[in-house]
Length: 365
Image (cartoon, rainbow, N blue to C red):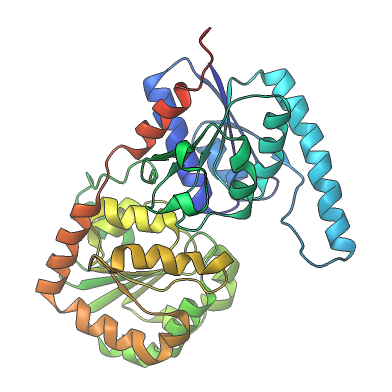
C-alpha cells in the first residue's frame, strides 16, 4: 500500500497531514508514505522532522492579475504537474491525499490524469480554491464543518472532524509545562498565538499595550510572534517585561494548552480543532486576510455554542483588553467554556480519515 499526501504552506495544512500519516502507520505499519509539498515552505522542515520523506515542487500561489508573475505561476504549475506525473510513475501510489494549499494543486491534477483515487481533506468551513477545483476528481472529501454540501458534492462528503498534531492529549503535567516556559506556577497565563506565520495585528496590539501588561503583575503572557516577525518585535519594550515570554514558534503546543487560562489566537481550522480537543478557553481574532472571510466562519462555528469569544481584527484596540481582563478572572465563565468545548469534541479524526483512505485502495490490495 502506497500513499502520497500532498499540500502544505501553513501549519493548518501541514500538521493535519502529518497526523493522517501517523494514523495510517498505526493502522497499516507496512504502508509506504511520500509527501509532496512546496519548496521553501513549512512542510519541507516539519515533515522530515516527523520522520517522513518529502519532495518539493517549485510552485507558487495563483496571481489573479495578468502580469509577468501570472505567466510565471502558470509555467511553474505546468512544470509541477509534469514532475508529479513522474513521481506517480516511480512511486506507484495507490491513493493520493490532498490537504489543501497550492502545493497540492499540481499533484491532484496529475493523479486525476493517471486515474489514481483521490481523497481530499478540507479543514475549513469555507474551502480553498485548490480543494474546490480538485473536488470533481475526488472520490471522497473529508470535512470538519457542517453545511459543506454548499461547496462539494454531497455524496462525496464524509464528516470526520479535523485531525490535530500528535501529542495534544495533555498527558504532560502542568509542572512540566511551567518549567518548560520558565513561568510562575501561581500566575494566570494568557497565550497570544499568531500561528505558524505569526499575526501582525496581534503583535502590534501587544506592543501597544506594554503598560497594561506591566500593570497585571500576577498575569503572565506567552507571546508567539511568528518567525517572520521575530526580529521586528523581540527587542520592543513589551518583549522585555518580566511577565512576558516571547517565542517565534512553539513546538510543544500541548504545554501551551496545559497552562494557558485563555488563548488569544487566529481562527484557522487547525487552531479551532486544537482548542476543541484540549477544551481550551479562547478569544478568537479571525484573520481578515483570508479567502471569503473563512476564519470568521470557523470562529462562529464554536462561538455560537458559547465555547469561545470573538473579537474582529478591526476591533482589537477598542475591545480586546477589556475582553481579556474580564474573562481571565471569570472562573465560572472559563469552566462553562471548557464544558461547551468538550461537547464539540470529535475523537480520532485522523484515524477516521485513514480508514477512508484505505477504503479507496483497489480490491487487489
